[in-house]
Image (cartoon, rainbow, N blue to C red):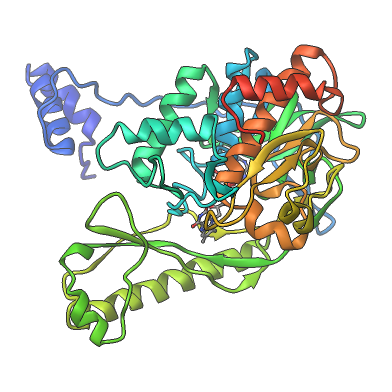
Length: 456
Ligand SMILES: Cc1cc2nc3c(=O)[nH]c(=O)nc-3n(C[C@H](O)[C@H](O)[C@H](O)COP(=O)(O)OP(=O)(O)OC[C@H]3O[C@@H](n4cnc5c(N)ncnc54)[C@H](O)[C@@H]3O)c2cc1C
């Protein structure tokens, strides 16, 4: 029978002839286009079927049954942040800087959520207007990130005195988030999807997550739900509401500086998209239909339909006089989910309260104005605290607000500041050995101010 040599067998033969190293170097050089000396050859090993206990679901009586099984505990931590979007990033940095063991779990391979993975690059509501003056309300961890981006050429625009609503480059933002998370000493689990919770009686004790290594658990004293969709508080049985909202898909156009704006205008195209730090690129928002963000069939359909319509739109642009050099640089790796679950908190912040600028004894952040034309709106701690469930705080776009305030609350600046507050509060609860709802608010406010946050 004819036997074709596999790469391993070939290497063995070649090394017997004294040629193995040269061959393996060559193979690596081919792969990455540059010579690498002493590059290791991937080893393979046979995995006996008994090395890992298996607990497959079984089909029994027409039902799929998941048997009871023990889970390995991958980490024990003080504060566990689930979701590494703007809120989760800020929460993890704030908690770790407050001096507690902090762990962050993120389902994708990078931080930033909709900001970076969703290519939503414009940080709206960074400022408010007080007595005619522009006031920066986005301070603390989120502002520090943007300030650090100003030191990198081409990483951010409009992050300067007198300006508002900065736009950042997604890769620079991911890079700087990595740096700050690393510096703060946060333990990170990327590529891990939190699928369930660990309960002890009525109290939340941690989460269960899925990864390539299978299903494992992390135990924590306080969990911050920064999943955007409230995955953790929903799994833990906390009261919440679910909303339908527009689901879009953002894309980026390349070569926009080589398009002929006058010619495009004649064809009725006035804008190619929103500003980016890179002069040749623009990001293009897409609203999409209001539908169920938790329905995976709907998410699948929208992802593919949006991508098709974006592709067609860009091809059309390329046929339009003035747009010939444009190209589709990228569709967002993450579908643009705006709102799904909202926590039922101990305080539901209303639009009326926000527009009046109502002050609260437990203010932990201040929301900004979309166009920096109205006053800031204090955000009470109660909007992050579940009515009954203990050991959990919500942060970001799933906190407790009324319907009219959703459009303000879900903006990146507010997610950064509520994330910062949730992380600091979780750390204080751990240090004070109390439930998050019992922490001393003046201590939280002092910690937040010490960490640079703005509370009005
Ligand atoms: C199309 C679109 C356009 C927008 N335009 C703007 C704009 O111009 N300016 C602006 O300021 N805001 C805009 N927004 C809103 C803003 O981007 C988001 O509301 C904001 O990013 C929310 O931050 P977050 O941290 O709460 O959630 P997200 O950004 O959604 O981050 C949640 C993170 O949690 C992770 N995660 C979720 N579930 C799990 C799980 N079960 N296990 C592990 N990880 C999990 C996700 O992967 C993600 O990284 C827009 C949103 C969309 C969708």
